[in-house]
Image (tube, rainbow, N blue to C red; front, side):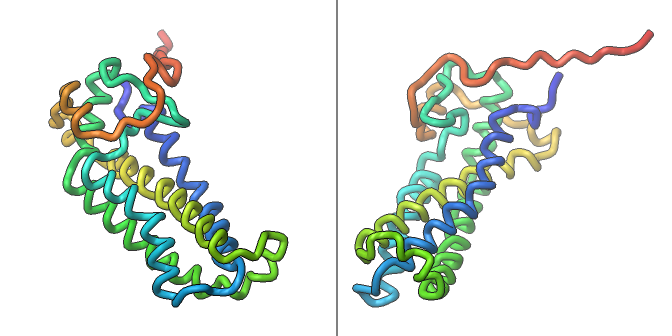
Length: 203
C-alpha cells in the first residue's frame, strides 16, 4: 500500500512555497511606490492586517481544506480513509501553533521590507506613484505571501509525521470535515488522476 506521503496534493501545496519569494519581491516593489502618507507603524499595520489577519483567522478557526487547488475542491464525501486521516493531522493544536509562528515570521520580514523599500524606489518608477494604491497592492502581495507560506507549512508538518503516528490517526467524519474546514472552490468528484502503482518483481 502506498505511503500517505505519495499523496500528490501534499507535494503540490509544498511546491507552492517556491512562489513565496516572488510575492515578497512584489510586496517590496509596491512598498516603494510614492512618498509615505502615514507614520511608518500605521502603514505597516495596514499592510500586515490585510495580509495576515484573514488567513491566520482561517487557520486558527477553520483550517484551509488542502484537497483543493486553483478554485477546485475535491468533494469531502469522495475522500479516501487516508485523505481523511491527513485532515485529522492538519486540524491540530500543533498546526495552529505553526500558523501563528509563520505569521510572526512574515511580520518580521515585512518590517525589513519596509526598511529596504526606499532603496528600490527607482525600480518602481514605471508604476503610478500613488501611495494609497501602492499600499493596497503591497497588502495583496503580502496576503499571497502569507497564503503560500501558511499552506506549505501546514502540509510539511504532515510529511514529517512518522508512519506509526499516521496509522494511529482517526479518519475525520464527513460532518467533521464540513464543520471544521474552510472549503474554497467548486466541488468536483476528482482533481488529479488516480495513479496505480505496481511493484514488479523478477522471477
